[in-house]
Amino acid sequence: MHAAQVAAELRELGLVNDESNLASELTLTVQGRQLAEKVTTSVTSGPRWLDAIRRGILRWLDCNATGLIQSVDDFADDPQASFLGRSFSREESTREGSYLHEQRLIRGIETDQSDVLFRPRITAAGRDALHSPGLIGQPGSGGSVFQDHSTRVTTGSHSQIGGIQAGGQGNIQTVSQVLAAQERSEVLRDVDRMRELVNQVPVTEQQRQDLQTAVEGVREAASGDEPLKQRIRDAAGKVVVAGATALVTEEGRQIAQVVAHVLSLAQ
Image (cartoon, rainbow, N blue to C red; front, side, top):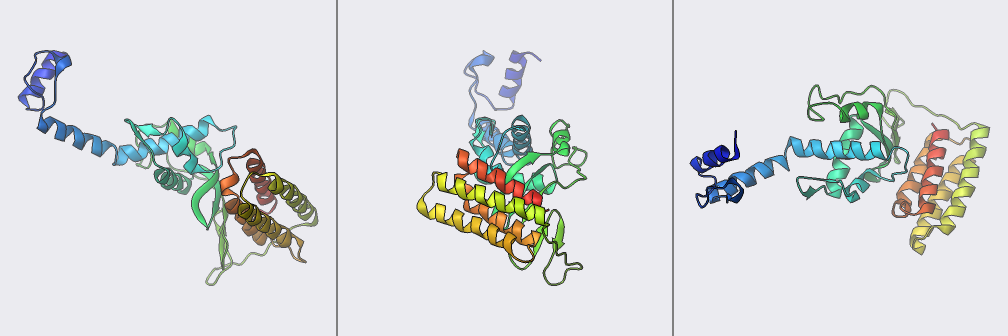
């Protein structure tokens, strides 16, 4: 259909003014503007909007697969974090990042002190979903996943780590894993490294003290007669939370790498 024909039909519908015969000079009527606003609202608040955020996060992680991303909500700061001229908010990035994590399309480190997913990475299923037709989250869109590569760090009376709940009243099974001597030595070396980095990281003195306290918590968890892996994971998670504001610095990124190593040892 030619532009002139489209313009004529829009005029018949009362969506554009009859001021000009040129399609390039059409202006919307009040009814046309209302319809345009409804269309824009439906696109920027419905399933397509959510799909745009989810695909944006997956594409962002895929393009930065070799880099070090501190948290999924950092996606909101990316220049490409927008759709139809509207930018994605940090809250939307956090919420949809959690959705992608629940669907096993991305992996990362969770803590019970924050809804933010730290050190996010795209999974193989996430790449499949990114390149699949349809909306992410809709049946047949490629969102099914079969492996859990995430780490959950939870403090309190019970914990859930890697999809398996351990401890707490009412659980079927209580797992008590003690860190081996060699692994404990590595954790303590990591603690010494984190101490050095905490002294160098450019943060306020209060933030430095919070980080130091969290790091000492890892040392205490690894130094007892029976260094439980769960306690070490909990303590390492507190380091991530205490150092969240410092993760954008080089020293903060190194601390995050050391914490990731501690978590891998305590699995």
